[in-house]
Length: 199
Ligand code: SF4
Ligand code: SF4
Image 1 (spheres, protein in one colour):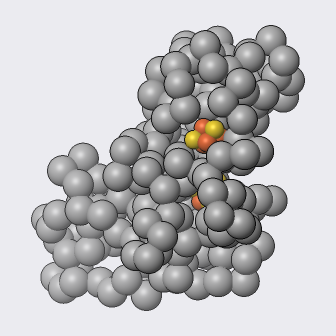
Image 2 (image 1 turned 180 degrees about the vertical axis):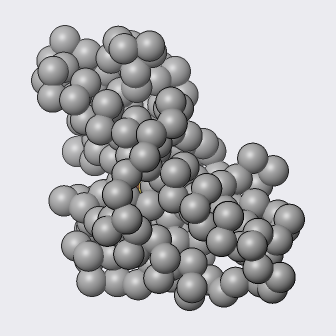
């Protein structure tokens, strides 16, 4: 993938399994960064997935949805995955990619940087943690944690707005709200962000 590490599995020669097989949940901050950096509307790269424990609703008391990166039907890869040669692929949004992609395969267990148990290219021993820039990685993982806190605060604001009304609010209104949400300050709620899960 395009993550943080030095791995024995060899991202450089990999066809990007993780970018094809994971469903990548994204934060409001990820969506704002990708929209600005890639000059795209969120509709072009986000899909809303109904989930019992999702974050956003569109009608009062209605079902909840999470935001995920879209996949292309043909390649079954993330919309940003570029096929550069048979068996080789690269992230086309590298500088703006979601934080979870940039930090992959690292995760915080408590406050300790570790390798996730669910990588698609061998176990955690496929990765050489000692060769990684651990202070930088830890700082990025903490930034991701803060981004999920902001994301949940914005979800609460959006859902309150929906619940105060009596009708379904549109996807366009939702994206307009989240794209302008960086002007609305940040809150805090102590959670770690969702991690990619097999699609
Ligand atoms: S599946 Fe593993 S080796 Fe392949 S790109 Fe993703 S992280 Fe790298
Ligand atoms: S944004 Fe880039 S690194 Fe993340 S899943 Fe898509 S192609 Fe892979």
